[in-house]
Image (cartoon, rainbow, N blue to C red; front, top):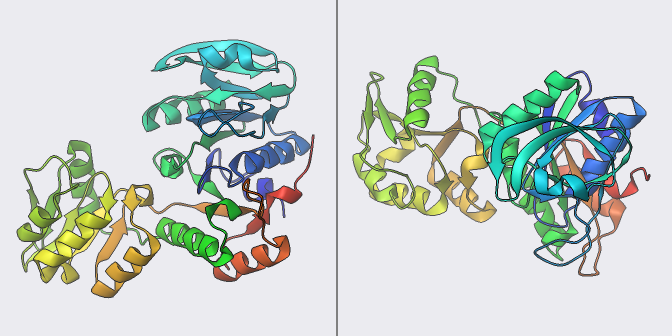
Length: 345
């Protein structure tokens, strides 16, 4: 199975994200670009963060380069424009600014390696992805930086590819556990009630924690963020509370503090924007489920595939066949692809 077969004709803006550095995200991205070239698809490419440099500026380790075909559209910071081997024709200099310059939209007029660093905000990422479609791209790909799963948010992209690998742990079972947990978060149940969704939309826009009772009457709390406010939220929950809307991040401490303050939380749905806002590890997630905490999202994340990298830069590796089989056993509804067997340029 090719990754591009999961995308072509179905989506026009997707993301590729990684569980950590060296999980194989850039390899997966190159595989996708290679497969798209084989089908003569015109691609648009940008990034949250920076990618495509020869050496990681944090770890000082060698990185896979990003190779694009002639005709590919690129949105990157102006300071990286001349770092690319591919010749680029400037189409637009946007008003979006980053620490390394304004974002330029360009078209590759020759094949070659490129460096990409896109806008800083999610809304700007969405805009440049749409602009590349307007210029002629059939598919815009957002490259997610380290731990920046925000590009998988449905407010930015329509679907995502998750890269994972041996780098997460020397224990294969732990790698599988962490990856499956991430995928399960992406599949958190959606809130379907239009009355709740209407109130939630306002709460997210105003960034207000909002309680909704059985009569669908909203009540906002005078707190700026849910972080470190779990006890305040728990104290505000009453027997009549039906739903609590939580803008921003939802972390373990907030959830645990809520459960410690009231027994009524078991009858409440806690609604967040999407799973990229959840920062709860696997074991705490299992505990919260046992405690009866009910979490919903406004939109679930459409995960197209999980790509695996059996090799770690520390020198150890997993048996590729066993790793793929074990991951597939727990992700039976999500395709698992070993990108280290992919095409080469």
